[in-house]
Image (cartoon, rainbow, N blue to C red):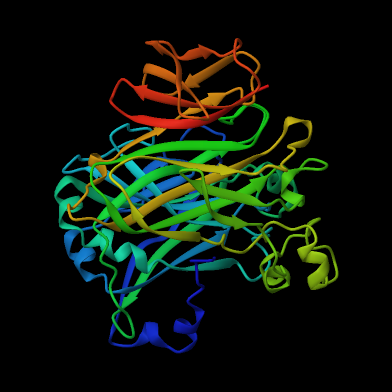
Length: 445
């Protein structure tokens, strides 16, 4: 299911020019620089924080947060400078401890959710069009922007990120010799109450933010493309609404960019989402690809041709997928995302995955109330040792048979030996030192 709607009907209907629509321009043509170079010292645009060459942040004032209406559209505009390749960009909502004057990219006290992602086109700054717009329906953010509990604990910032490097353009694009500026970026919101009902979530749970996943050095199950994250809810949640963004990358021969794979998402071992990226024609975005490239070629491709191999289009936004769960009990839950057929040829490439949850609870659950642990359990299947890796130490691991009978338990160890058991399925009951508990299925070879 696609949650992301292009909202273009609002533009075409002229709604964003009506008196009932609020427009908020947060960033205007901020210049981004070489993503691999040391952070530049050029002046920072007024009102922004430079978190690095690839990212700017802008604090939302109370008046701006109050101005958001029930239906919210966000527009990102990326302009051509001295990077003529397709690159990844994102928009994050950052929750920064209240009244903290500034922050850095790696501030451990900052909570983030990725709200949007896009792919830049191959752009030559000397050919029109010189910029590309991306538009998103983010009406679900209304509840966050108006959440008094969140706002009393955190200041809210919007971050606009676009990675780029100038090396090819330095020699291929006229006027780019010796330059290190790669793109310009603008960020605006539009909102209206017309034909809209405001969301009333009072829970926000960041689960994964731009998490790198593959099957060779970033997976929670050795040899498989799997990400596990456990979260603990202090109170039951209804109408749990999950937002998920993912893109596969790897431009090498046989790379994941060019092979469409099915993705599966589970909550507590129940499959809740299945999708295959791509499935659309990239022809509508050809106009923005003003630099010759190997993706578009010189002539239009058929719908069948595009959908046979493409996972995303240079110049297009990335879909925000989602699913809902009517009821989640208080306590521990595990989200698992897996891509079983992914190969990552020559051990290259990765999938970038972001997930967050909103919902309703009898208690107003703040982000700080929800414990989230990204945990690795490997190898699985195994013939002997099972390892548990997380940022929180392990207090105990108990092994249960499929019949529910407890077989053994270890304490203060991040591994357990099941070599003496028969081949089959076993359940690990894991307790972390912060009190987080969860179960996980393991296969003994």
